[in-house]
Image (cartoon, rainbow, N blue to C red):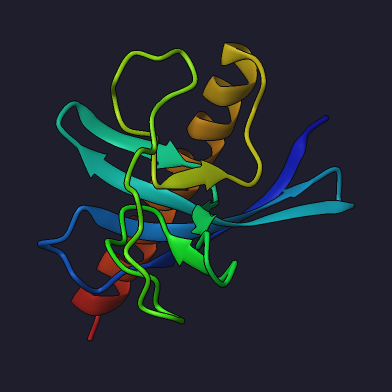
Length: 132
């Protein structure tokens, strides 16, 4: 499978960690949207699209965001016992990837393509602002 197109939308907030959103097209047939380019402690990296996890209220079954203390629907106090499956005692992540690479080679390929398109878009915008 080959990435045939990457579109990058730069963010205007230069002081924030989120630098851009990208849309990847694979083999001109499959699209993955909302891939994030983030500035981390070790430089830029690519984060896959994700969604916030929810847990059901035991009283009304409303889906509340993880770590809510009270149900947003009925006000029932929620037990906050979200733990990792390994029993390590560390809390679960609040987000789950919707799509992600399985191998490290696939992750490196995706990250390389997205960051290459990000740098090209940054250079394009930079040259457009200096020509005026």
